Amino acid sequence: MPIQDRRKREKEQRETSILDAAEKLFIKKGFEGTSMDDIAAAVELSKPAIYRYFANKEELYLAVAYRSVGIVCAMMEEYVEKGITGLEKAYATGRAFYDFYLKYPDQYRLMMNLSYVGSAGQDSPYMKKIREATGGNLKLMCRAIDAGKKDGTLRSDFDTLMTAVYFMESLSTALEVSPGHKRLLLLKGHSHRDYVEHSMELMLHSIKKYD
Image 1 (cartoon, rainbow, N blue to C red):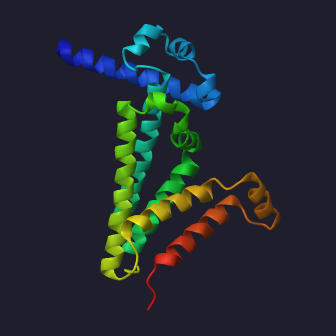
Image 2 (spheres, one colour):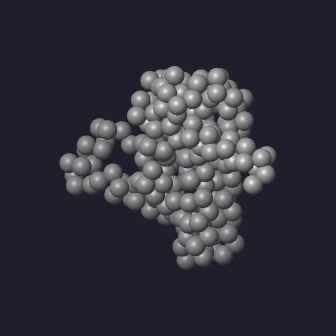
Image 3 (tube, one colour):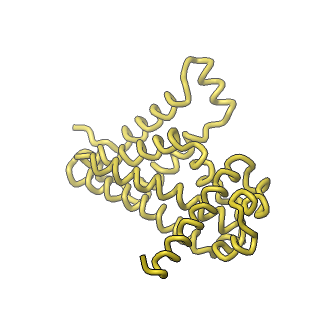
């Protein structure tokens, strides 16, 4: 293997090791509770070595979160591809996001808590990548809705973009139901999963076309 290729591979492996260690610490100790010293010790590198890859802790957090965004993006594309009608594809976007929430709860929390980075991370290239990826998810939802309007499975009397945003925001809200409401639902025999499934059914019912 040429020296240049070997060095590139070693650099990529080291970057992955840093991200893996940082992810574990952010999950265990949170953003505020994790220091660059902690990460350096976990990956057995000096802090200056880590700073050659990531400008600061905020950028490192965003890089970790971006990996989570990549997972949910891949799941959405996979689920939507299996749908036939626009209605099925629209449902698939929500189902993919919910399955990501169930399968990767820690990564979900990392992805949804970008406010930790504050203004320090707003100009990070990883923040730009996250925005582009989440924008891609929104476009995927919009295409599903437009497909449903065209094939007659979804109503055509509403704005596509506003509906896609409504669907995604409503699902996020359903996933973050308050502890008090969770307890109330449990007292009545309803799990959080029941509530989320019910919420998705209501959302789809509101845009589904009926003869």
